[in-house]
Length: 276
Figure (cartoon, rainbow, N blue to C red):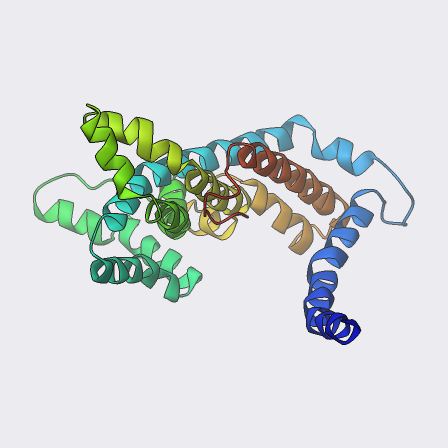
């Protein structure tokens, strides 16, 4: 037993070292810079500045766009996950591969591709012009940013919902039909309650990167408005105000942890979803 315990500790050592170096240590540095000034003295000024109205507007904008993107992902992903889970096993493998296929491409390349599609002389506007319609200004708008979020993060919504739905016993659906439920009743009273853990996991996995993204807003938003990710990046790379950037990052982490805690209250630990 002692040898087995020692072996388990040795096998866990690389994971523990990785966790300390790349998770715990960065969080400690963020907290340190958030509560100190440029001279290293303890202060709350960074936190107080991070909650000023100008930054609160950016927080509100980031949260609003993240909620919109998450809701759209849910509307698209839920029926797709249901259709995949009810297909034949061989078809499921093909469809899941198609869902994951865009993720094999670099995130930056995917975003740049949407720039060429949405720009004023892009593919969509060229098509509209050829059929006699007026071109639309789509690039450098909040709608383009939401579209970029939905496209990049949609697989993170589909996969957890699918992983739960595929495990639902079909006999429960048959029993509901035998007891007089129509298709809508089966969906709302049987399938959705049993898949709620996957929905919560998917919402979490989409909302968290959406609220903290900065590259999508820079390229598809054109810098016309700031999201919280843009603000943090600017503090570190342009203004060189590490203390304020760390304070904003700390507040963002607290908001994310609160949202994840609330969402996990609605999830079922045994439901089979991808718990973040």
